[in-house]
Image (cartoon, rainbow over all chains, first blue to last red; front, side):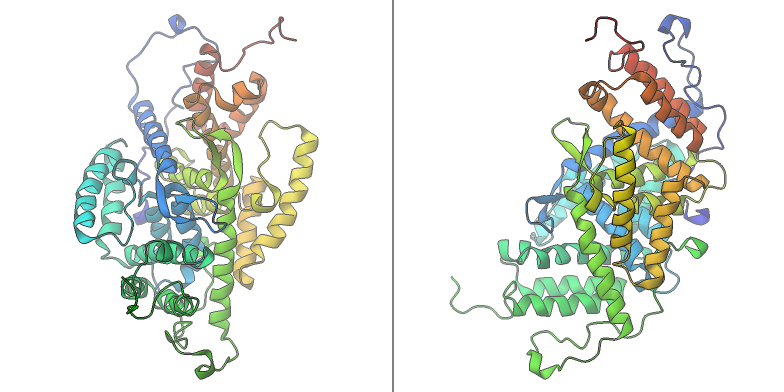
Length: 240
Length: 240
């Protein structure tokens, strides 16, 4: 992936790690040797991959389109990757979609420790979440071998900071996806949490920053959500 | 992604689709105009993204590492994408990891129609599955607008045919991942289905074809699985 090799920092392969562990050989015939750096590196990568599996148990607020259950953060991340492929043509010219893909794949790993925070939580909750997520990033990306850990962490920081076109497009997808799910599930989290329209529209601005085309699409969708009663256009004077 | 733009075939953005649908404007003030090609294209992409959501309901045989439930094909696809990032250094030199990423993200979409077939099913079941998956690919990728549909379908065909280094590496990850889960879940599907060792070793050959290093790792892991009693090294003479 050239300059975009986000997590690919292995030295060229030497002998295959593990080739000295022949099938069925009893341990005493293969005395423990000092592990080769390549083998140790691969072991750490596998540990990272196994730790990542836990993201499948982190529940989000959104429900999947058939409405049967809440979405988890692993399948959500996959959905964003698929959106990056399907909707990549709506990113600003020159956006490196490969980097966007890598970013959405790792963006939620911190939730293994920090959990998922509902988008429309209050600012104190968001501040606490930010601290928890940084601590999680410190722990989780450090599972990878050294140069790779730094590159992966930088990719997550880039997503969080939203300073590059890639990060802004990735964040736009991350904002658009739950809106699409809400439209398929009778208003979903908007209705369940009685989210005010102006808060939803502020998220649309973030989508527009990443992709004017997707922002326009989101705005039209929100208009339909108002028409269908999923979002209230003005404060209801009869409401408690 | 240059020559690697697997699904990125949008024309440069015109005006944002949907900008004519102002929030709250009653339908009669916005008479239905003929949709612009850009808008129609975006609508089709979103339909594809929503259809893809159904992959979250396709259950695989493997259990997630905490053993609480079966994995679904959407989170499995995400796990492969993460593996492509973490383990990409073990692909043969020159492998386009960006293409690998795109491939693993779309590789299981056909299961929306065809369902997941257990890896160790008989050859008749595999033949039926192949027919069902081709029909599914015909339907699902055709949801995308024209040039993009062809490119996405070609990416899926490439994965299936295993003729490129990218496809072989992607398939290696797809074979390695359930082995990793089995090792974390007391033998998982190996024990549940009493899978013979030689069948598991034949899958290790496919991993070696994609990545000698990961193949060596898998072979060592299978040896540990035998030691731990997850796989029987020889046919048990006492067995039924």
